Length: 162
Ligand code: ADP
Image (tube, rainbow, N blue to C red; front, side, top):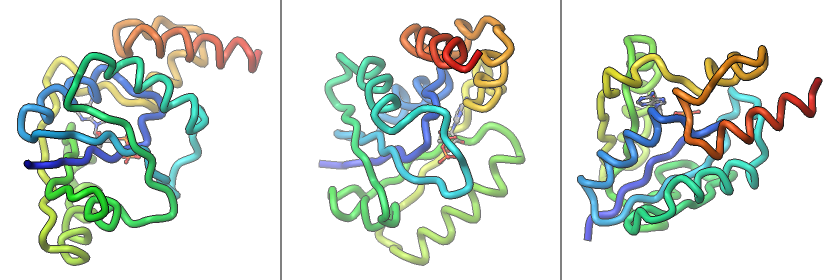
């Protein structure tokens, strides 16, 4: 049984992430979406809010399950769930630099775990959680970029802040 993890902030989950999940799930028997701590990012949504959004989005995808990894290295988490693959997405050259460093570091920490990159679908190439948050903050329409439950969550979050 091949197990993969797809770690990310998912703040919030976008159509780009969803596309990657669907394609990545075809490569493994089980795919864990892993919500971790990215110390370089301050999240808009709480961990509980992100878990709830992701669970709604992956409902019906039998192979996919949501997990949380806090205060633990991604490779150590992968090992703890018997995963041999870390799935990540590549959009532009800007992603590449960051992702390459991380993949090489993780390979050094645990050579048994491979990072596998899927290139973004051209339809979602420009979709990022940060852009979506910026659009929502200024009352723009985010329905083309995120699943429906996230549209509502984003609107609610920024209504609260106004
Ligand atoms: P992190 O904080 O770990 O970078 P993100 O949620 O921003 O978490 O991204 C998780 C992964 O998903 C990264 O590998 C990122 O490149 C990828 N990703 C994000 N948006 C897209 C997209 N639109 N298409 C393909 N991959 C994406």
